[in-house]
Image (cartoon, rainbow, N blue to C red; front, side, top):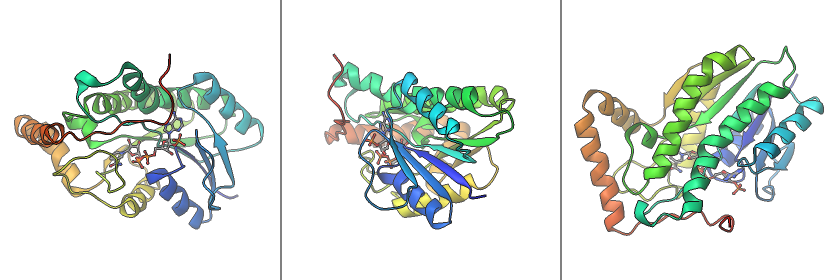
Length: 255
Ligand SMILES: NC(=O)c1ccc[n+]([C@@H]2O[C@H](COP(=O)([O-])OP(=O)(O)OC[C@H]3O[C@@H](n4cnc5c(N)ncnc54)[C@H](OP(=O)(O)O)[C@@H]3O)[C@@H](O)[C@H]2O)c1
């Protein structure tokens, strides 16, 4: 049987590249995101989905299982980034990051448990970030939303495993595709990150931080927390002083 992977947040960036790798390995890939499907042919199907709607996520997963789909792997990539002063962050972008980076994953896990047939086991991957472990000025709410994602994944792991879901947490490194504007951390290419991400999801490990400098920073946050905080503060304050800005303009503000 062809191994099937669902990538939630597959229209661009790491999710798009990951889909390409899985397809090149002969796996069936189903992509999902809000936008129109990418034109290249790595996807057997591409479905429009906004993960911030619990109702839509539930309906989509129900439909896929009802159609006989049985993924062995579901990778949750969907993310929204705001970079800039927290004092100026609009309310709708604060909420969008929590909805997309954290609650969408919760919606997904609940829907998978609700609709999977009893004998179907699968792995679900939460895509986190080094910033979830160390935090960073100018990316305060983004860091917090990823920390919430990790905390949820760790907490829910035991209960969800009884429902056939194993949870993996993978943190990509800082990449060159225009995620956050940070001078300091070594940026990795999307291709490198996707290759290592794909390899990690094929292993059975609980929590992985990709990129040596990122792993070092997380280790430092445990064993020398003041030094880690000082480094991240310098990086984040530099971004604020330079006026580094990332705004998620993908949809109009909610009213
Ligand atoms: N880039 C970095 O340096 C970096 C570093 C560490 C961790 N990460 C994490 O790695 C992952 C990939 O990063 P990236 O930079 O490659 O991301 P990206 O290019 O910004 O892509 C994000 C994906 O999420 C989808 N998405 C956004 N909001 C959505 C929603 N409400 N519902 C469904 N899909 C939604 C987007 O598609 P649509 O717009 O079509 O919905 C897109 O496919 C993210 O989780 C990110 O937080 C990135």
